[in-house]
Image (cartoon, rainbow, N blue to C red; front, side):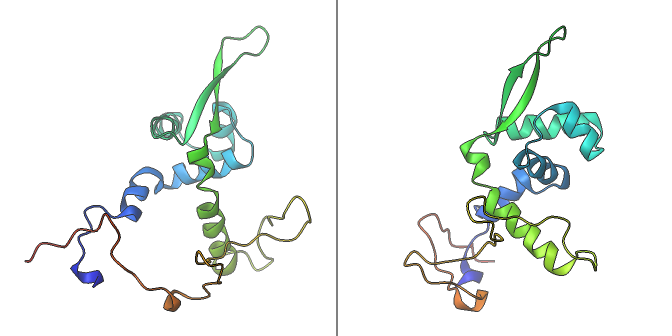
Length: 156
C-alpha cells in the first residue's frame, strides 16, 4: 500500500522544506525559550548574520514567526520575532527531537535541560495517542492508510 502512494505531496517532505535545516530548528528552539531579538539569536547561536536573516525571513514568510517592532531609548526601531499559533504548533516536534537526543546522544552526565510542567513540576514527554485516547507505544502499532490527499504513484 505505502509503495503505491506518490510522495509528491508528502507532509513530512513539505515540512522539512520549511523547518528541516539545522539553523532553522535552532532558531525555533531559542524562540520557544524566549530569545526574540536578532542580536541575541546571532550571539547565542554563533550563526552568520546573513544565514540568520535568511532563516528568520523564511520563518516569517511561512507564518511561523511574526516580526514585531521595538525601540530602545535613543536607538532606531528594530524587530523581534514572536512565535505565531502556527509556530507554537511545532513545539511537540521540537520536544520529540530533544527527547530522542536525550536518549541517544546526550553526554554521559545526562541531558543538558529537563522540561517540566509549570503547574505540577513533573517532567514532560511527547507521547502518541489515538483519537480515542489509547497510547501508541510503538510504530508497530500504527497502520498507514491513504488520506484524502493521497495520490497513486504513476506506474514505472
